[in-house]
Image (cartoon, rainbow, N blue to C red):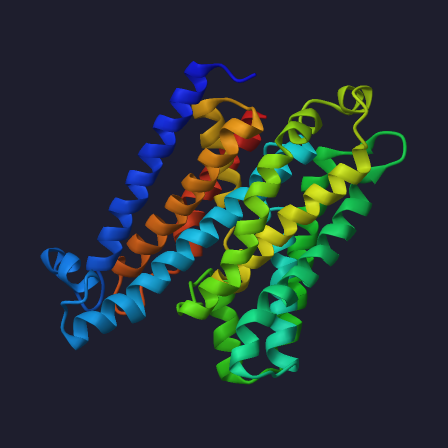
Length: 335
């Protein structure tokens, strides 16, 4: 049973994260190429804005903010699951190649499977999931040993190798494509938030609605998996079945996010680490905090990135990497 003091601390941190998200969202609504004064935000939100103000807020800013927030949450959820399942603090869907697998699938789908605009929005997460699950399966097989089970260190190394190999595959795929399509894929690789309309929210939201409760329901199994295999088997846990199911959940969460935000790494690495340092390593404690932190980290990265350079800004993926790469190096040296 979780004691009351850690629970109170968790709730306080969740409240603080929620406040940070709201403040960053307010800043994101007001700042941009076409500015919207902060004293006009409430009137516009309640339907008393001009046509230009309504268009800027409801058609441009608000859907992008919601998509960025949901995507950051999805990436943090994926990283949290992977770190517990693999018992590896360096596990992240971007670092170990899952995002790259999703990216190759997105590129192939975009270039060679033309569909209507309405179907494209909802089919893209499915295509990304198929690419990500194929990549995750290969990484798992190459990292698994019959005598030692899943080797966490090998998994990271194999994942990095797959990520590099799939980057090469991506270059081959787009080398003969049309210029306009290559530009889209290049923006995707850089982590440019491209899905900025309401249908993309409805394509992403169901994954989170299903996967967050499922992961919290499985938090006890994740606690056992994060200890060692002997402890998990000793209490009757079906190790491989639970591992595969939870990895599928992590892959689905990451694939749904990157299908609309592009190749963004390190959110799934940083958010769980920060959450664990705040509330401890128990999954039912740190996963809710990590989810909100992931949403906030990507939201603030995108808000700063799109306002730091005119007119297109800097992709959120690059802004996150500026922080994530040193953080990854620090963890690698420490561990």
